Length: 90
Image (cartoon, rainbow, N blue to C red):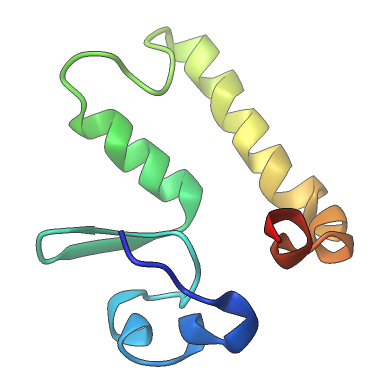
C-alpha cells in the first residue's frame, strides 16, 4: 500500500502517473498488471476470488449490485464535488 497526498497532487505526478491509466485513486497493482477505478477493481477482485465473492452469485442480484455502483458513480457526482475526499478524511 502506498499513500498519496491528493491535496499536493501526488496522483498527478510520476511515479503514480506511470502506474495509473486514469491518474485516479484507487489504483490496484497486481504484479505487472494495473487497474484504476473502484468499480473495475471490485469486479476484477470478484473474478479472482475462489471463495467468497464481492458480488452476488445470482445474476439478477449481481445486476442490481452493479446498478447501485453505476448510480453511485453518476448520481452522486455533484455531492462528491460538494464534499471532496479531503473534507471527509482530514
